[in-house]
Image (cartoon, rainbow, N blue to C red; front, side, top):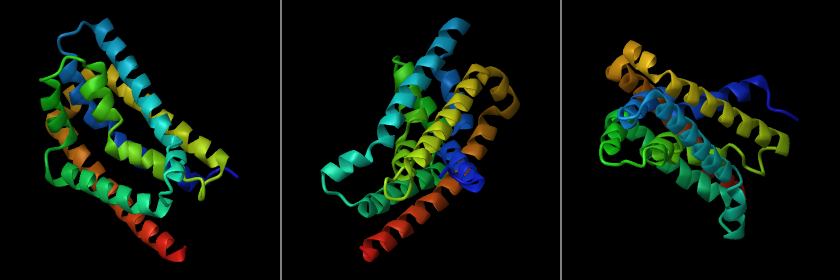
Length: 205
């Protein structure tokens, strides 16, 4: 049975929060400022493809947990804690654009680092990919739907990178920072839900 519309919307919002396409815009502009437009487009496409491969790998990550005899409830709690710390850093610390733009100034391998990892496929999106495709909670069709939604958000992210100059002109760095912090607040609630679900599942074993 496929996911109901509310679950689809919730999944989209979660992936939009953790991937943060708006926050990627200033990062992309910073790492591609020395390239001509064709080079910028090539970097955007390569970064998206690398991110997609990494996140799809985490979609099947539960198999690794099973082979290591790690209960999914433990991963839910651990993943939720890490995701909560990541979300709090988005809210109270440097926002995603500020932190990763600084990284961009120190590296030349722009498509992979820091653009694909950790700007697009970061800790939050990796954990979300695992937690939203649990074999015990979601059918194969639902997991495929989640993967498709994740790829859709990556597609939105790609479009925003391709139109980064115009978007940044409208939002500015401050606007991107505000949106990133709002996404952090949404992500923190998702993280707390994951922790509570993991604790509940552990005691029901």
